[in-house]
Image (cartoon, rainbow, N blue to C red):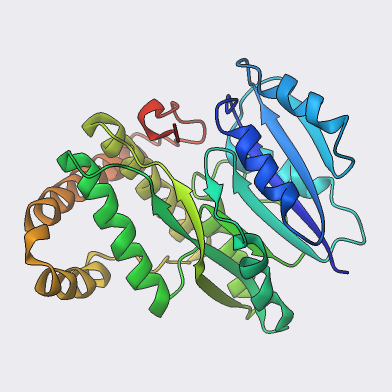
Length: 290
């Protein structure tokens, strides 16, 4: 069978990691799971070390400090076996549904496809405006990605891949840029669902959107690559169509647009004028699966 290496990027994910590893290790196939734990102090390392003793397909690399997800991914890429035919990268704060791994990998049977991405599904309730904005964002992401793929949360690709820019804050998009430059196709796999938790406070929502925007600005400047949600005009059409179908979503549509504009304005100032890079961002505690 085809050998697949799965890289799990973790920082203080003791609450979700056991469920995630159980899900990944229970999926059929010849795959290895390698956890890169960066600066964890909450028992994450101990959890994985205990599991390593009973799961020969599981391994752990401990980094003493947290230096950004791109550097953790590069550490994972450096450990790949020469026999590895497929790679999967997933953050330790999400949970794929049963069968999602196989669905994510299937399109790579086509040699023209170089990278695939799962569909993020927020676990947020819908009782606050912030929560409804998160659901709106991922609904729009899904609609846009079905037309022009934008991949994240859990992605798969065939090696080799060059080391990522260690300062990037948008690692999946950086891999997209690299693989599409080589004429590879991207495939969005909406049936491969991954549960994630979006921010539940205004502060965390704005911080997340600002960080992502800065990452896309830097990626565009360095590589010329533009993700499918980079331009506001790329968002307007899908948003209007969704609003026509579901006019009750007008409040979160307006609020979400305001948040996005503020985040892009602040991010542009901080990056273009102040030269800031959010490589290692503060943990958004409200955006953790419970």
